[in-house]
Length: 161
Image 1 (tube, rainbow, N blue to C red):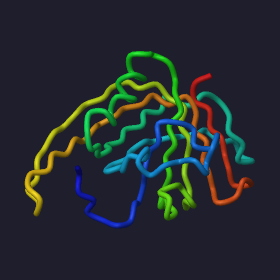
Image 2: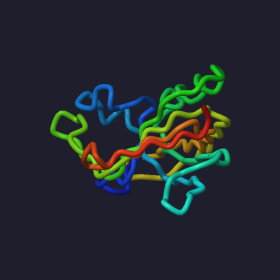
Image 3: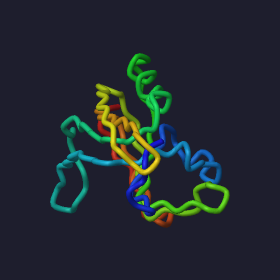
Image 4: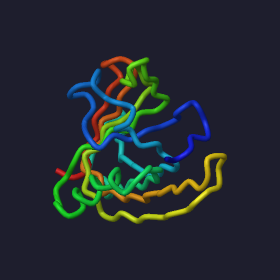
């Protein structure tokens, strides 16, 4: 099993829209994000309103998984060639029952999986050898819903209709 190098999770991804049932998100279903990158630009008029088409948005992230079973969902979504929801939560906290209790902010991405790459490495720990798998996932984003602490600060950006 992979070793956590920090007791605090900075960011996790869930291969689902967690707002459908936020109190039922189990810690074991969350994958720890190692790296996260995307660029999104909107054209705005003088009053600040968004207009015109946006460029395609590519989101890339790297997650650490304990076994190939945890990476299966990304491969299934790649083969399905449909868009799927992914929830990114920043600074999440979990209760004593390993269920999501709160998060600082987050976003729900509806996207197509464009590519998945695996990187294996082994580290030596006190219990012996520990194999870790890092997945580099690339998404073509259809829409992003930015989530704040309260519902009024939620914001939806659509890129592909």
